[in-house]
Structures are given as C-alpha cells and as structure tokens.
Length: 294
Image (tube, rainbow, N blue to C red; front, side, top):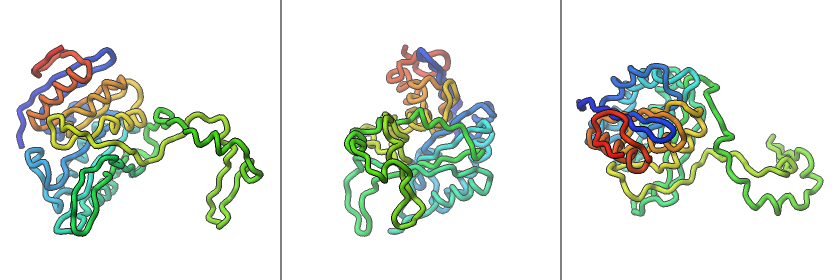
C-alpha cells in the first residue's frame, strides 16, 4: 500500500508528538539512533485488511522481518522494542506465527528480555466448539542489548492492605530466609516486607479492553503504553509507534512528557491520530497539514 506523505507535529505544555502518514520502513530512516523505545501493536495476520494489506499467517514472519532493520537502526543501543500481538486460530488450530516471528528476530540479534501478558478484564463474549474466550495477549520485550534502559521504580504499586495483617505477628521462620520445605531452592524472608509501602508489579498486566474503537478497529488501552513508557523510556526520551493507528501511544507519551513519533500508512488513521492528540492530549497544532484545532 502506498500512502501519501503527510506530517503533523503537535505540542502540549511539556513535549511534542510528530505524526506521519507513510511506510515506517521508509520514514524511520530519518530518525536513526534517536529512539529510546518502540512500542506497537502490528497488524495481526489475516486481519485489518486495509492496514498494510493484511498478511497470511504463513507469510507473517517474513513480512515482519522487513521491519527488522529499520527498527534496529532507529533505536539507541540501550533501547527496547515492545510488541503487543496475538496469534490466530487457523482451521481450528492455533497458528504459531507469533513465536516464529520472535525466534526469527532473536536470530537477527534481538534479545528476548521478557514476555508480558496483557490480561483482558473484559474480553468479548462468544462460543467456540473447542476453545474458550480469548482473555489475554502477548507483550514481548525485546532489546538491542541484555541490559537496556529499565526503571522498575517508575511502575511500583501500593503493596496492599494484606501486609498489615500478615506482618502483625511474625513467627520464627519469618525473621530470616526460610527455604521451601520441599527443597525446591525457593525461599522467602517475610521480615523484609516490614515498612514497605510499594512493591514491583508482576509481568501480568490486568487492563480492560477499550470499549470504543476510536476510529480504529484494534485500539489497545492507554494504560498499556503508559506502563511500558514509564518502565523503558527515560524522561524526555523518544517513543516510536510504527503502526500507530489512532495514536494511543502518542497520547501516553504526551501525558508523560516524552516525545513521540507516530507512523501509519493509512491516511484515515493518520488523521484520527492527529485529532485525538489535539482533543484528548490537550495539544495544539505546531506545524503540518493536519486539520489542526488548538
């Protein structure tokens, strides 16, 4: 699909977001070595037929690898790539194109740092003869190095009221590391929780599915990019979404004071992203050819 080149930059009180209508394989070459984080939800196989000309699951890995080099070059040495993606049922069987793609990226130098799960708290209802409702999606954290930028303190959560009851009366086994009784090698020291107010989250993110599609058929919740931007992009850094859709990643970046570059090859989604940044991101038009309102 060939898209007309359109570009708009908007600004809020803290930072800017640039939205470009074009093919990210071409656009990202102008930003080599500038990105701290790529976070995106690429077109799923045999879905979104008007977006990057839908790809059959058998061909998905080869297609996605055409983005490998642009993604690699746009990232800083300590940058990260987060892919939100879900596999597909083909003829009643799960097609493993997602895992084939991750393995192919690893073969080309990407380090698979961790696998996150987006647990959907409100999945769509339905009935299938051999499977249940889809209630989760992958979020793969890949990086150019084994020690990418990582700020876990930025995503700490309240420890919860349970700790008050649990720590009220510590037993003998709670005052030092207590190894598992079954000799598994795992252990715990409950006393280390005393006085703590926050805890690191797990790699399972429980977030609701967006109820309205915001002008795009597959919008992920704002809290998803918010989490990964806090965790993987320093203050003032650049966040890139090469399949930007309606601009959710840009909204998250604007709210956190990070710069963002949003690229999509669909003119309709491009305009929707510009409109959302202006309306929901409290931004004003800085330059470009979007239908700016400030």
